[in-house]
Image (cartoon, rainbow, N blue to C red; front, side):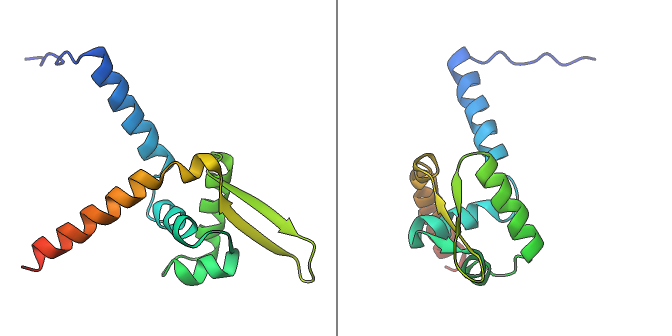
Length: 117
């Protein structure tokens, strides 16, 4: 027996598509943490980010930073220093994720408190 697909209002479909797009942009274990550190700390160099985002491998961090840059959430600025250094920071569009980051943090704190009761 074939099950019918439930009809959803167009505005709900649009909202669900937006959630899917957001999940795709923030997909993976590290992107949200990287964005969080850049949001709270500001501009950071690669090794500073690596130290802050505990457990991330250099190769993985580099890949995630490239993805975030490709999606215009962060900027990468190469400095003319010896040795060459690179700074990463959120774009204005990346900074617009602050509500998501703040909400996730607040929910995580409440969840931890609830579980530890």
